[in-house]
Amino acid sequence: MRNHLIRTYQNYINGEWRPSASGARLTVTCPGDGQPVADVPKSVPEDMDRAVAAARHAFETADWAFNPRLRSKAMLVWAAKLRDNLEDLATVLCLETGKPMGEARFEVNGAINQLEYYAAAARTLYGAANAVDKNTLSVLAREPVGVVGGIIPWNYPVTLFMRDMAPALAAGNSIVVKPAAITSASALALLQEAEKTNLFPAGILNCVTGSGSVVGETLIAHPDVDMISFTGSTGVGRHIMEVAAATMKKLSLELGGKSPNVIFADADLDKALPYALKAIFTNAGQLCTVGSRLVVEESVAEEMVARLKAGAEALRVGHGLDPETTMGPVSSEGQLRDVMGYIEEGKAHATLVTGGYRITEGELAQGCFIAPTIFLNPPADSRIVQEEIFGPVLVVQTFRTEEEAIAIANNTKYGLASAVWTRNIDRAMRVARRIRAGSCWINCYNRLLPECETGGYKQSGIDRAGGIEGIMKYTEVKHILVDFA
Ligand code: NAP
Ligand code: MG
Image 1 (cartoon, protein in one colour):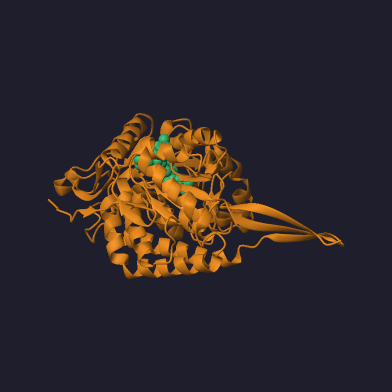
Image 2 (cartoon, helix red, strand yellow):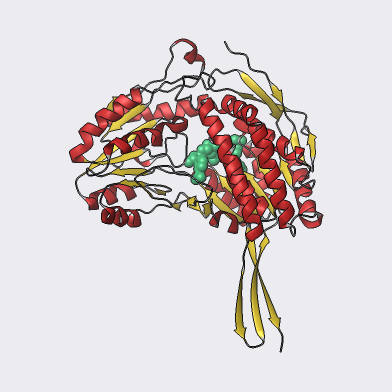
């Protein structure tokens, strides 16, 4: 049995580390072994009210909203502190999510990259000007929205914290973050590094841990919060829209997906194969943009399925700290139950190619491990095809024509990501344009870069994260008209 060093954290409010007013605590456990790894406040609405008041006051009075150079510098120094402490941050992340250390390091590096990208963008937040007539100039200036509430999921708690909060800060807002309860430690660890910069005015950065149904609710209903940036499930996103309507908050919603990875017979299959495996089994399938539906041309389906099966069976499922591990556990017992429910249903309707069981051998019995699973040709209307499983489960669907491939790709309520593999450039472009999704990768998958936008069509969300679109959403447009007649 592993014993982890248990770290103790407090909420970060107005530049101070504070316990919850209730005194209650939450234990964060490692899904790889069930052992405790951190202890954080189990906050109450009063804590959230304090954080929002601090953020409001800082937004209105601190040297921040009108000082892009300071924002840029603070963010760059924060990035440097994160880099100095990368191994420790990756360890916290590995333990609380269960992901392999290699993936945890990659994630922390990704977050640093986001921070540096938006630190630069802070200084070039261009508006526009229109010379309306001889004596009239119309100017559009980008201004911060105000207090932004950030609600972060547990699957990529460090990268998604930064993808959503770095542009909010760069644009001049103050933030109040509510991390997912089961991965709160990494968020607070990030803020410990921010504090070391001595460059963020008190109250610009705030973080309150606890449950979504308690402090999350306080945040989304709060009259002093101007915008909610939410990444998580479509169901909670819908609820946030309803609650936020009462105070007319600006919203950014990055939700679920069931993304098609479309492979034509003329593709470079040797390149497509490792991408297809990574597209679904990275982070044990717990990534919003996973390629959870492999849509493959019938003439190469048998070959591809055989190669995918071999690839899936070669994965080393294990504890995140074990250097041999290439796939970790799912995030919690609750998540494991949900995923196993889908798998059992799948067995009743489709051909099980590989996997399909919880791993209970040796030490792995203490964690939430699921064997990499592949189903072939499930009915198009079955739940394993239509719903986001958020676990290591791939469904393979086959097609004969380009039209059929597009129809299958578009046949869910989601529209987050997609990919098309072919050596025919005309076909690649035709298909990419007709898939109703926020991203389409051509001859690659999951190239999620700070410079590039992602986001959802249909029920996968509202607005974009990443790139320039990902910062503009954190601004209001101020129109200023100058009359010099
Ligand atoms: P979730 O249940 O929607 O939770 C996400 C966050 O919302 C957590 O911090 C959660 O807090 C909080 N929350 C829950 N109920 C709330 C409420 N009533 N009011 C305010 N906040 C509330 O999602 P999840 O299960 O953590 O994450 C998986 C989902 O995220 C998947 O659907 C995935 O596709 C999606 N996702 C999307 C993207 C994207 O970019 N589109 C990226 C990553 C993940 P608690 O932890 O306390 O419940
Ligand atoms: Mg949840």
